[in-house]
View 1: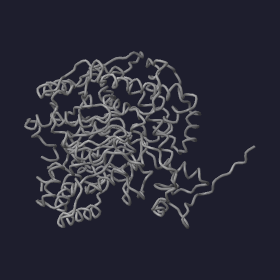
View 2: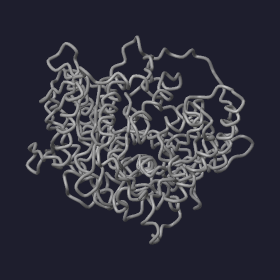
View 3: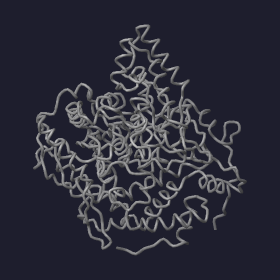
View 4: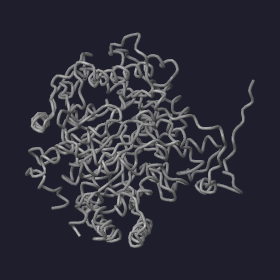
Length: 107
Length: 529
C-alpha cells in the first residue's frame, strides 16, 4: 500500500482548479475525508491484472450491427433558444451577461 | 379511494381504458394520498425538524397539479371521443428530480440548480408522455444521486422509509422508492449508477428494474457517471416494471449509447414462465469481501435472514421448473468497490464542471470581482458536501500522473468483472446460466446516520452486490421476498445478460405469482396501516 497523502498545498491547488470556494471547516473536513478515501483507491493496486487485459470504457460491448449510426453532419437549430436564455441569472438582448473575464498576457 | 391507489399500473390503465374510472379521478386519489402521507416537501430553506416531520414520508420535492390535471383531462377527453391512447393512458407517475422536464423545476436535489426550469424534456419523459402517462410530481434523491440513503439531498426534510420511519429509504432513488411503497403513485422513474434503483427498492419492499446500459436513453437526465448511468422504473409489481420498460426502452438518436436491439414485449413475455431457465447462485454474492487492515482480503457473511431468503427462493424456483446451478464463480466481484470508486468519481468530476452559476441555476449574490470569482463563489455555495468531496476526489484520481495507476487500472478491473459475466452466461460455457440470483443488499434498511457513523461492513458495503451490474452493463431487478424478523423488507436480485430483461422479469414474476398468498404480503408499510 502506498502511503501517499494529500497535503494542504496540494488540496488547495485542487480546490483552485475545481473552481470552488470552501470554508475553512469544509477544507479541513474534505481533505481529511479524501485522505481516508485514498485507502479505497489504493485497493486497486492489490487487484491482480493480466497485462494483456484491455481496459474498457463501457461494460457491455457495442458490436457494429447494434451501434447507433453516426448522424449526418447537419446543423439543426434548437427550437427553444429563448428558453435557454431565460434560465441565465443575468441576460441582455439574447446574450448571457458575465462579469469581467480576466485576461492574462502570455509571456 | 384507498383501493384505487393500491392498484397496479396495469390495473389502473385497464380501468381507465374500460371507462370504469376516469384519469382525473385516479389523479385526485393519488394526490389525496400524497396529501395524507407525505408531509411537507423538501426545501432549501434552513431546516428545523418538527415533530410531525417524523411521521411523514417526504418523498416529493414538487407536485405539478395543474400540469397533471391538464394531461389527465386530455386523456379522459380522448377516451370519451374514442381516440387512440397510449398504453399508460391516465396512469399517474412521478420522476426522480434528475429527469429534465420542460418548464418544470428540476433540481438534482442540489442548490446549484436552484430555480432551474429546463428548456427541454428527457427522452424518457417524452416517451412516458407519448404513452399518455400523467406526470404529477418530482421526487427527492441524494444530491446528484451521490449516495445510497437520500440523506445527502440539499432539500430537507429528507425521505423516510414508509416501513420504518426512523430508517432510510435507500438511495439515491429514495424518493421514488418511498413514493411507490407508500402508494403515492404506482410508478416512479429512477436512475441506477451503482444500485440506486435496486437498493431503495429492496429497502422499501417494492420492485426496481435496472435495464441493460444502452437499453433506455440517458438523454436529458442529469448525469452522475456517464458510463454507468441507467434509467428504469420502480413499481409495486413486476408486471408494472415490464409495462413501463416497454414504453421507455429503445434506440434514441440523441443518445449514442442506445442500441438497435428490438424491444421485447416484456409484459406478454411474463406468461412464458421459467421452466428450463438456468438460474445460478454464486458464493461471491453471499458474502461481503473487503481488504482488512493488513491489506489482505477478508470476508463477512451477509445478514443470515437474507442468505436464508436466497436459498428459499432457489427452492421455489426449482419447484417452478428452473434449474438451479450452484457455485457459479463471480470471483472478481470483490474488486468492484475500489474500481467503481475511482471511475465513478472521475466521471462525476467531469460532469460537475458544467455548473458555473453563469448559465443557469444558483448564482452567488455576493459581489464578485470577475467571472472566475463568480464560479468559485457560486459553486462553493451551490454544491453540497458530498458533491464537493466527489468532485475533488475525482480530480485527484484523474491527474495525468495517476492515469495508468488509477483510471486505466480501474478500467482494466472493469474488464475483469465483465469477464465473470461473459463466462457465466456463455451458452457454450461450463455454467450456461440465464440469470443469477443474489441478495439485493447485504442487510435491510439501516437507521438515519448509520451510513456515516456505523462501522458495520454490511452498511459500508451496501452496494457490493449491485455495482458489478453497472460495471458490466448488464440488467438487474430487485423484488421483495419477505420481511426480516424486525419487520423490514428484504429484496432479492435477479441479474441477466445484455438485453435479456425479459428473462429476469419472467423470473421475478414467477416468484411474485408463487408467493401472492404469502403472509408477509398481507403486511403493509406503517404509513398505510
